[in-house]
Length: 231
Image 1 (tube, rainbow, N blue to C red):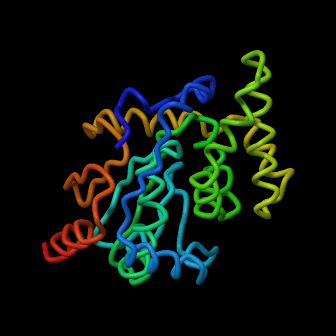
Image 2 (cartoon, rainbow, N blue to C red; image 1 turned 90 degrees about the horizontal axis):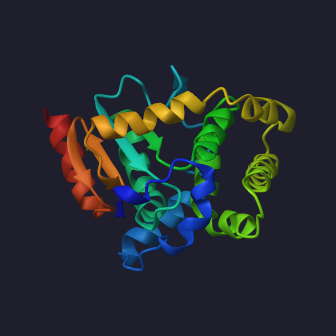
């Protein structure tokens, strides 16, 4: 779990993240293989019900009785592990069946959060989110040679725009949204909500208000979800 001090807001701090990225090597092979199979089967497809409600992304039916609020960062190894191994199982069992909806709030640099919300205007939040979880080191390497803050910002913007294009988004529409900064305040709000909810590190989850801290085994999430459904 990333300490609260490593929840970085400004893109200028990306270079400093090199020393805190850690992709946990402890895995449950069975769970990991199941998740990988689900992912390859198109789990994060454009067909999953999702929408923006007042700037908040919701994956799943808005009428689902159980809400998971997820606070994660693309530069947190345990967050990436949850996204790659545990989340696919939750989606398959609970979100696709209308029992759970997920509200992800990304405590990443503002530019990345804005990228996701601009992507969702084209129904691509989940696909772009997965890409960002899978390529943080590439972004850091791109920025490591920047000689100034302006150069750093330009490199990051160009990298994110190129990623959006590679993932099939309409380039002109995405660029216009990203350059406008229209979702910056929503990303600021995610950080404020994290503080209000008592989040001290990532990943942290609220399942109908019950807090789960860290990348716990799938069984821990399953038990909490079942308890919430029973209530």
